[in-house]
Image (cartoon, rainbow, N blue to C red; front, side, top):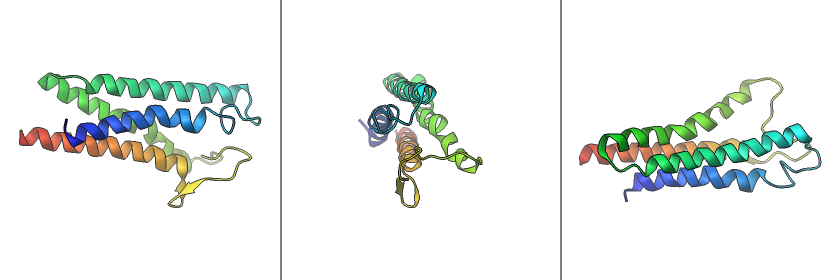
Length: 138
């Protein structure tokens, strides 16, 4: 298997497992400050991210020529479509990437959640780029 494929698979795994680790706990979705509607959003986020990752995995298992190329392209776009809009929320007044009542967690001076999501996007895009390069060389 080529390195690009590994990066795409890593992106899918991070998308699936990251939400379970970051959101499915008492510090977030099940925290005492979260009401029923916030728990609803937390639950849908964890489950939908997992389903998106499973879609990526299904697309990445395509083996025939033209179908595989299209499936790989769509798989690489899934993280961008899922997480790209999160970056735009920083420009919307009154929104925050931080849980209420908890200290902000930052990496590289940015909200840790956005860094994590953008890393998933970066893995997918780098994987796609490597796959395209390998395909052109073959």
